[in-house]
Length: 604
Image (cartoon, rainbow, N blue to C red):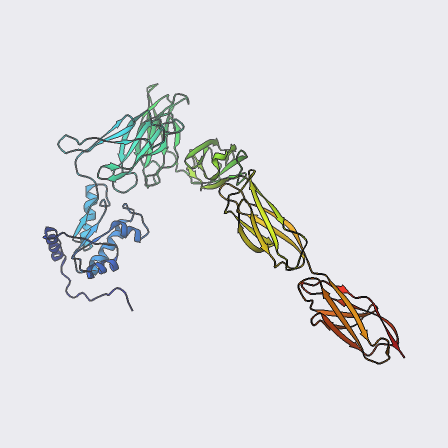
């Protein structure tokens, strides 16, 4: 059986010998190329290919266990892979340990010791830390980063804007704070901004680190006030994830406020929770356990009245879930639609606060909660909004309940449509081609060419046709003789709703005429009489099936047509005159017919 070859290890060198070999490989004379293995199988393949040493890949190892890259895999799982690889090959192994799985030198040193204990002889760190203090300055609408040279001088500044492209710039960056917000071991940036949101409110800007002193584009969060003047970072709800805290000055809304954005642990944050600080301007904030209960409390300095607000950390918030529905979907341009958000709490209680309705990244409105629901009424889309819209409802949370965001609700803005359905003729005759023409119309216009229309005979699909010149046609000659309900359905598209139409198609059989003769006539009692029935067609099909002979109203026998003729003999007719008729019973294509009466005289 083919597969990875496992061999007995009788001559494996010591770790010290492998370390010396790895050192010599670094000294040359050639360039050392390290293939990146993520498990035992890939490491053995590289060894068999002749590589003198093997490195592990942090992304490959993490991804093989279902984790993203960026130090998301637990350290012990990563070390287990290093241990298995080092024990399976006879060449030196060096481990990629990302940022060292620690935020302090001591923690990184612990990781290094465990890597060596796992059998590796080297490791590489992606810490982006050079041990030289750097300088970060809020400069207008950006953060100026100046990397330190270690001698009191700094490299030229690099500006990182505190607002994304297309967003209104803030009036100024008032505070810059540094912390590892996404848990990858790299210091990230947090800015407090005056303005910077579409609503004109203050904002917090999060710039995640790329490592090496560079940062990703800013992600903006509403600060919950008119101007954000300060920022702090702490785990305020005790879930092990860093949260954001800011102080807001409010000119139009009364007292200042403290904004708290709970962290998701991956560098993203939930919508802001606001707390009244009791003073006009909350100029600065700090986080500390001021009452000794082990929970971080919030302090805010109010500039206008020279006061300090102390906000004691309350009980753990209960979880919520939010769902959003619409009153109509799809909706036409200019047609009213209402959105209802329902907030369900962990303990079945009634939450307070607000729900913000968003269409993608655009805020539609914020509405208060009443009885677990918030309703956004009288939303009207225009023809410029045709297509799909991702509606979400974001619950703000309150003093007892956690914030939550609904799954995306797909709302479609489409014009209505209708179908004009016509037949080439009804009634038609069996086997005769019939053409059905469907014309989908939306907003007073034909739909584009290439749109699909499906034709049905009641529930049985007949065929599919594409529109050309606004119309879709389907021709069939296979309809049976009866009344048919023909339907045409149009599924709609990104701008038009689905529609359907139906009509009645009557399919008739071809008429026939039947004639009857008898011989001999008159006949003697007991004599055999031969009755000959001829069924004459009017269509392309030769009549088939059976003929029934009647003596008055009493049946006297059946005969099968052959090439339009049927013969029946009778020798049991009683003496007298018998009014004989022939009834052709018809077939799938030929209709019934009855002959004229033939009076058969039977003498004694």
